[in-house]
Image (cartoon, rainbow, N blue to C red; front, side, top):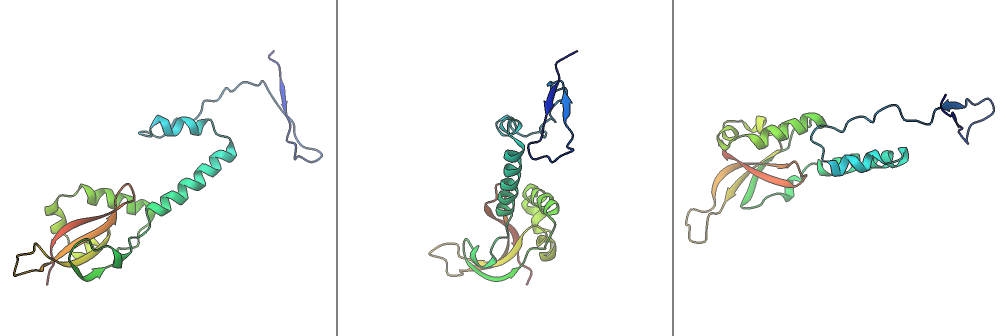
Length: 165
């Protein structure tokens, strides 16, 4: 019979249960999520419960930061913003799915969407855009742009066609 090890909780009060184990770890660790790099999951497996709780808390704060809404008034890369439509408020999982779907869309697919449909992916800006210093017709447009955070959490702007006047 293997040696038994008593595990006692120092904070336990009178009448606490003492666990007797053989000291071995007969349960396997859960497998890491598919696609997660080894440099992320391997150190996590070595953490204490407190360390894992801290990592979860930090990961949630970092995720919230990287998914924060883009400030509508501060996103115009070029040209003059003449109108804006705020992004639709979606649950986190829906936002992630919509973002992935949008970033995979072709320019023609984006152009075919209405402003309301585009607002599912980010906020819509209508801009008049200058083309160069010697153009007599500048600014041109109006053009539609969708402003959103990419999968890295950085602000990106995607052209979505000529605005419907």
